[in-house]
Image (cartoon, one colour):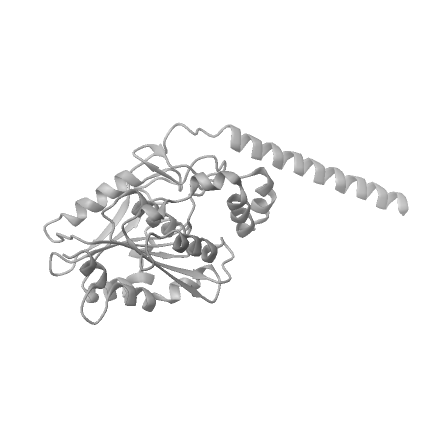
Length: 299
């Protein structure tokens, strides 16, 4: 009996060792074989749905989903909120930036320059004629919104739900490229450390993101939100399991040029809890005398 148990133990340990070697080999192959120079197929292409207000000249809200991909703000789930924005006096442009038949397959070096030009084109359409630009994004879409506002001075406001203040790696098997680029030039990003490999394999994304942020290289990848002209509303959950959104939101607030430029709202719950606070978003966008954000631009 003892010999049988011993043989089984040896067999089990050998099987585990083989699996570890195979996993390690696959990780090394994925990382070192990835083409970091060639841009993804359909780079600079987007999936768009435009909902112009009945009157031209209204402010434009542009919406971005997160790591789930697709054009989620054009889904039935967000239809009521799109209609509420319309009733408030906004045109709405929903954007899918990866994961559709007309966009890059993965979130990898998404072209902010092309995206900005696409947004400007919609602002100038005859049925739009918008002079005020507001970005609303959740999770990776919040990271995208803040990166856009920090790169282009014509963004008037950002609503970031579960925000990030750092550019994270692309969502590829290798994770060796940036999430964002401008006209083909990747933005600096905080690299994926080898120490986070097991966290990634085990599905602990929060631990992965915390390890990424703890690296000295993360400072060079910080989104320079203090350079943005936009007013910002940052809504972050106090128990975010995906990344430390509240901590990053407070860092953005601390770096703001003026006390009134950034407003941080902490809410209870996990990563997705922020989507339950669209009333806070609406209050940020308007007041009893009309649209506060665009009034600040003296339209």
